[in-house]
Length: 210
Image (tube, rainbow, N blue to C red; front, top):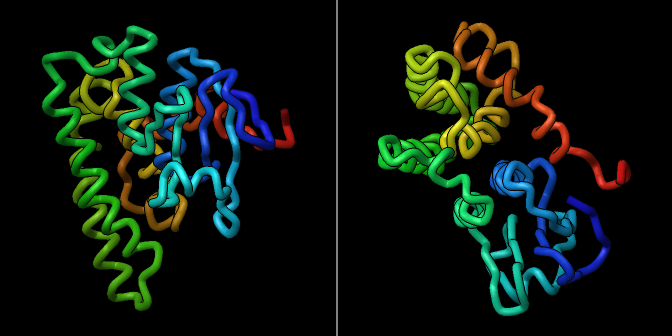
């Protein structure tokens, strides 16, 4: 991962925003797949014209592999990276494949919708309602992590862990004390493992550190 100030095709090129959960999981996948790439950190107030021209929806991540090949869905980028590194079968075991994608879908729809409501609620009633909805998913994950001795679907990290982590991180950071009071010890342990990993710390480095 090398930050650049302009578009470059020597390596795959990623438009990203450091705190965006979709961009975080794309960067994690690229990093653990040992793919060298250039990264351009966008400003949400001034998005690059080139990015908008190739992906009019205007959201990150956007990965360009060649002039005619682009991906602007984070899950698509993750799968491409794992395929390039030939670790797809390790991170998406056949026996868990259906369950992995079902969990990620629930995260990206039900949980993300309620996470946004929780973050931006206009009243305490709406905020608490959204919080409780989010907690139904959190509690499901907590049970799965306990059952699988540390991670969501197995004893090792899978696509599910990498794809869901950044959204749980965003949820926790809205009100860390409120989450702590729910006493979800398995989620807390799981979260700490990924949060403190060298992989996560690396992909969260700021441009001025390069």
